[in-house]
Length: 600
Image (tube, rainbow, N blue to C red):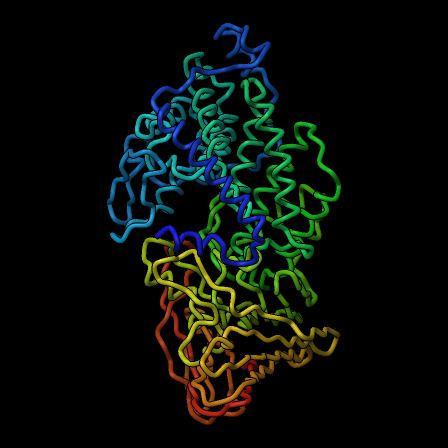
């Protein structure tokens, strides 16, 4: 077991010195955990800094009620229907009805085999719905019931520093709604401050840092510390939290955000999430006169430019890699493929109205591996992203050289999304598999190795590489290849060329295979839901039932019809929609397969 954990930890590009530092760090974490376990039920009282520590309770309340309100929050107009504090069982998974125990947080096994899904429990316990409350009594009642059911350091809602950080951010923001309410008394204020002090202490003692790699988890941790430090200077530890939070937030921006503005986790869903983390953190700092170097503001703007480029003409985003639909501050709930609202926030922050308008030109993002071909409302996204996180891969999929295509306001060929994580390991495996993406599968193997029982580990065998990119007024062309099938007994490399005729709005896809021996080839096209499919010899037509627009995928090398396979799409976490994929199968010594895609 320990050997397997070590192998997973050291996957990707890891230097020996880095591995050694990580071993030392983990020993320190283990010692910290022993101390935490021993003092779990003996939490310190509220600790304020001077001069606030000299104020009596009434004076402290008066101070908080007179503080200037934070000014950048957008309008609040969403609340989960029918949710009241008396109905909430904070540790109950509604999917399986499993109630998580109050064990010490490090003892919990978060990946179970009974259909329970910790991600669903965590979403509720981020307390984003408190943002909608203007009734101080209801706000306090919900917080009190939450604390009663979730004593410090115990149970699933203290098992991940990221979740604690996001909950702290939401409590801080929601507190702004009721801070000046006459219903807030000194006892209630002390309760809120002590609860937030516990959140800061937990985050600081359980940071999800690693010398090997960091991700959106550690980024959320330090964002939470920044929020606590900036918004609660009255707390004794606020200054160190704020300084650590800002320093590490910017350090992670240097590390996790690539030169083209993309997040390095090979996921558009997590790009949206980390863009929110930076957006709201930078807005908070500007509001409180906390200086951030201009180079980081430029990088944040480039993150928004990337979103604008990949959003389809219908306003929604291709769901490359994983997405759990998470939002940092869910003032209004948006489904996982809705990224346009982030551009609206960014346009206000940067005073750049152009971010709100659809992109008109083709764009290449070589660090992301995203190549966007556009002309009017004809759109194709070519995906040459790697496993993510410098080859470590936790949220990447087996989607090398896959495409998304939309036209006439309709997405025809799509990335299916994610569906769930640990709640259904079989479906988790299917949604990240090669056969669920519009690319080629060879000899029944995955492009990168995966294991059903390790849902956040993926190999780095494919390593896509773009060989050519051209874009002009007449056409776009991208040529790329990957090496995931070199590990086969008789190795083969897959090269794909996509050419886009902008004037006539059609695409040519050419798949070439370099290697020896005979192989079994499966070419997949994953159609969006709601399309009517018709086979005609070596082609398939997908028609929008409502508007009668159609897309034909025609094989230029095979006369046999494809097989239609029942699969699924998921535009939001936990959502499962029936859809159909077309799969052309051919065996033998094949050097090239070609396809023309055009509108009807």
